[in-house]
Length: 119
Length: 231
Image (cartoon, rainbow over all chains, first blue to last red; front, side):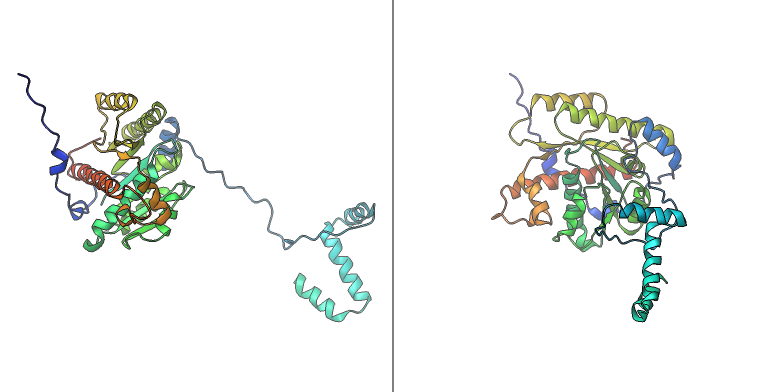
């Protein structure tokens, strides 16, 4: 007569492992050379997914805000030609124009604000 | 003081479920014994981090958010400050995965019962073996099947398990079953045991499954820490 199969009761009778018994000193894990690690990883098809950091070109400027306004036709070209002629940027020309205007009009309070802004 | 890394180069394999279940249950067990648990989330999607921040976690669980560039340093910092470190990673074949497993005492390779998942699991096993050769340290690992049915064991799953075991790959006896309660912890926070039966069904079965999984992890760690396994 065939023998009856036993029940798999191993797991039921397993005692809970005391968590504190696993908190002893770690098995030593040698430090690995990171360049060598990357080489091995890439060889196994595990590659970097992080985008390389973009290198910032030039210094950070103070000109961080934008302002759009309407002009008459051809005025943007004239503005650009004047700036190019002076060898300066558009935003620098605008500042020079505002300063000249405030000075000519003797608008002292606004001129002080202007100086505070560009300091 | 073990570090356990959840690895799979495929998304949706169950890494986050395995990570938060292990972290939450170990924290629950360690709460009154002064055992602190670290959960390191290096997955850019930050699902583990969102779970930890939702509240309801034992207070001895600390979250460390990490990325590819800092994963090794973050694991080493977490190791200094905690008794257990559990690392959740993104589901891609990335340097972050490779870096994290280099610091692991146990790598749990998550796998569903499909050929694609099994192929990706093999890819991770090859990485571990190559690292082992390069740095002369066997990295212990075991394959954990996830999203399994309590009712049936499909032939594909049986075949994959047999392929692994015949090749000498260690496979968990327990698998993480497909249960709503595992998903519900991400909605409600905390651990399965603390879910409200009014909100979620199958809590008891899921809690028993989670406990069986955590106990098997602990038995594997005990064996590894005593020098009885080399993966």
